[in-house]
Image 1 (tube, rainbow, N blue to C red):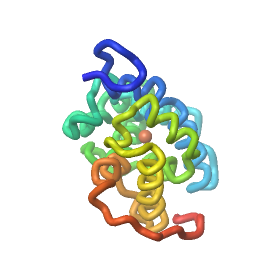
Image 2: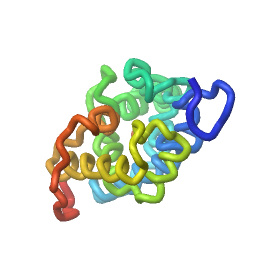
Image 3: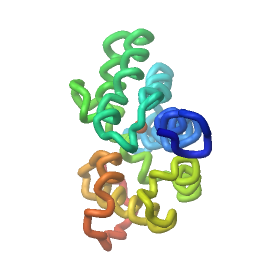
Image 4: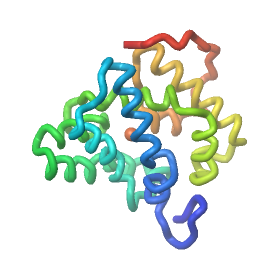
Length: 184
Ligand SMILES: [Fe+2]
């Protein structure tokens, strides 16, 4: 099934990796989050892993099918393993709670990246990946998503952002407009 600005039978995840919410912009936000959370920048090999961690969305209809989303960690983990051995595989695999890997150092920066994501970029993502709004107005969908992310990060929960996307309209809206403290 096609979605987004590209025609033909391009999959949702392919668009996402190229120009959507799993594009290199996301990886840059993850790198910035790493610095914010740990107080130092990731090492060069870790930066490469960060840019690889979500490439597994390629070829998946990840918005329509949660089961496909569950496998998105595999491709990046394989590549990181080839390049950096077991440490690379563990770092990438451990960013996703659906993988058999233990949570890695990448897990929290990956979630935190949505906390610092600029609204204009979330807006652009809703244009390249219209299904992100789940049929709601863009502004409303983004506001709801940001509210959930804020609650998840500031409570220290660091929940799955994809789960938030799926449950956004079931969850009660919060008024948790807390301070932007470091939730470490
Ligand atoms: Fe990610």
